[in-house]
Image (cartoon, rainbow, N blue to C red):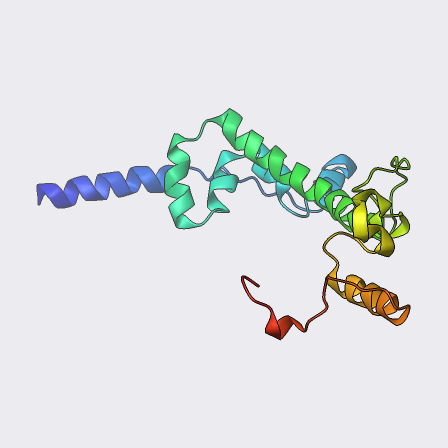
Length: 173
């Protein structure tokens, strides 16, 4: 009986509390209030000024975690959300701009001619010896050497390199 009486008293106290939500009618609303109401179409201004509205907008596990969140952190989260939304189109614009840069080769200085640079346009006579005969071929470019040696053989010169077919060589190959 005592437990039932206490429950009834607690229920009466809770029922006696007034609701904190204020409802304005269209007739009593000023032009400024109407403007702010229409600006708050996403509910951001309400969530900015009311911790309760912000927490009610979260999913249940997040609501439980918000007990440990300070007011500064709450407003920081709201601010960062809006900054992310603001910068997202700018980020997409920069990201797409990178693809347009890929289609153009950047201006670079002309490299000096070294023996290892731009080899196909250079004379390979620095090898010396019999390799001077095939100075248009690079050192390990065997297909070019075969063609060059065939030309030398047609001229009547004896070429030691690549005289026999590769299948009949002796040793490591």
